[in-house]
Amino acid sequence: MSNEKSRRLLIVEDDPALQKQIRWAFDEYDPILAEDRESALAQVRRHVPAVVTMDLGLPPDPDSVSEGFLLLEQLLELAPETKVIVLTGQNDQTNALRAIELGAYDFFAKPFEPEILALTIDRAFRLFELQRENRRLQAMRQPDALGALITRDPGMLRICRTMEKVANTGATVLLLGESGTGKEVLARGLHDASSRANERFVAINCAAIPENLLESELFGYEKGAFSGAAKMTVGKIETANRGTLMLDEIGDLPLQLQAKLLRFLQERVIERVGGRQEIPIDVRIVCATHQDLKTLIQSGHFREDLYYRLAEIVVNIPALRARVGDAELLAHAFVRRFAEQQKRGTMLLRDDAMRAIGNHPWPGNVRELENRIKRAVIMADENQITAEDLELNDGEKHENAVFDLRRAREEAEKRAVIAALARCDGNIVKAAELLGVSRPTLYDLMHRIGITD
Image 1 (spheres, rainbow, N blue to C red):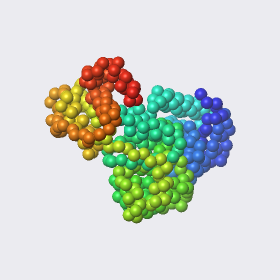
Image 2: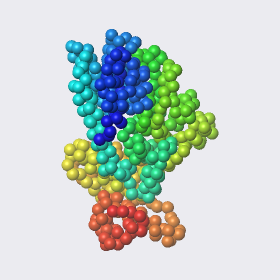
Image 3: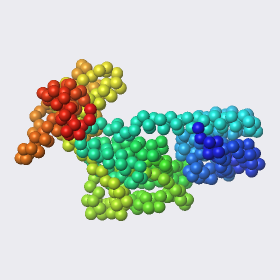
Image 4: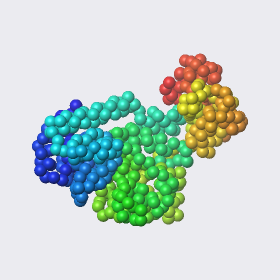
């Protein structure tokens, strides 16, 4: 457990006498004061306190609870792990229960007994610290955050190592690749491998939101900023504060917003739509697109200065058809996942299905494979999935000729070993039988091409 003095307690109270009483009663902690919603949110952004005590009646209308409930919602959205203890008036059970429903940790009626409230505050601190320790231990059990990415392809393994190297650098990462290649999986892996893993990962698809709504989605808006803006709303950038923000399909970002995003990347502050206050934001940016940004720059559809801000680390993700053995390896994993989800018991891919998967060019990449496997698991009459269930042809695959015999042998050997292991779902005995070699020979081959069991 941390030292008592290092435990930060935010006190939101507009009555100076009560401020003084609460601060005096809980001076064994590290108390911070705020007297209204804006100052409270500023303190939360700056200090991220473990525990907050707050009055529901706040300026500009202390006789109403509307400002207090608005603060509670925004505070929990900004710092969901923080424990909030709401202080209410006597016989105010309705508002107390509403606060609990919104996510408050506990409530106390005023006037309160400092000794009893102190016990609740201490319990809240201990719960916060236990949950934080639990997250830390979970992270230790999964040292390779990118281990969730299923691959044996050497090119993809190199990409995983690159992502692990840059995870804690804070560099902006640009992921390039066809649709469905797993850009969001890699972005999430980058987040999980970083020191921001306990904070939020927020993703937004710039191509999926109409241009007139995208600015408010990204930057948020103030109440009354436009017709229908009934309350202040936090945008995706602010929501991801201290975490990671993924901007998917960044190539579709309108030029006007490109300028505003560039300013944010340079100054690390935002202004909500209709607002004038500059809000500092600490967020890791990961961008992704299937488009050629340099071509868009030449045609005037993408800012060159923004590109160089985003392209500190550029990662080109190969298509599934270019990843040796990955289609078969992923197919086994998807069958297990969807069979469990659909309660189909143990299901297997027949040899004709495996040949069809290995031969198909997968224009839709991993997303197409996932969808076909899911459909086949649902529609298959038996527990064995056929090429027909996948709606694929069991055809022959033609390779381009390679005239360097030594390199051709090495490449053929490497591809055969990876493909055999993928087809047999990592089973060494079956893969050795399929290749017609002994297990020690297969282990030697695996060692030679850098594959670990």
